[in-house]
Image (cartoon, rainbow, N blue to C red):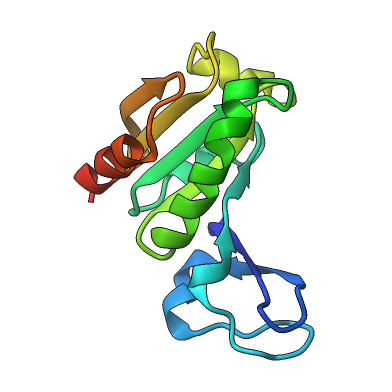
Length: 145
């Protein structure tokens, strides 16, 4: 299964599912046919079902393990969205709701949130537990490139 990123169309606002391999080819909106810019990409939604397939990319992967009731998770959320735009096409960045996906949360022994998991070639390389500045996340992600 090929990795998918969600890109919101700047013209009509529709969310488009774009295979990661097509980002560089200049995809177009499925509804209005406007060019889709990688700058509008959003974090990928990780689930228990797609997690393994998504981390097996050659790109570095950042997974934000979070829950909607978690205050620090809501603070780090906009940072993750900003990084998804900044690293679009260079890294795969997404979010895993630990309440809805307990199998993956248990597999990686997520006991505190937010927890950020960094993968390279399908293997975990680094992690951050708790709220940290965006610059630290950016540096750790860049180190995997």
